Image (cartoon, rainbow, N blue to C red; front, side):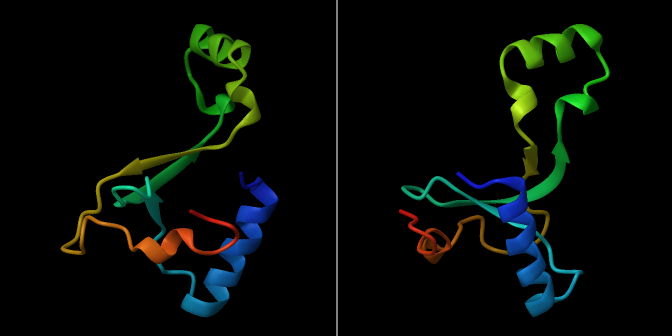
Length: 91
């Protein structure tokens, strides 16, 4: 599990190494590694519908920042590299 502070620190390190224009990709499921593009970050505060926001809070989703994904829009491989899980006690 990664906290917001840990993710921000890791992303700041990546920005120093790669520059702020680098695209963020998500490596999903190590058994069949799929690559997804980060589309945005959402919290319960982003929910427009009051009933949905209350339901999300009741379900405990207000404790999380959600990263929304979409398929990559370029010609890069749709598969994530296995080394994406090798750092910090990964798979």
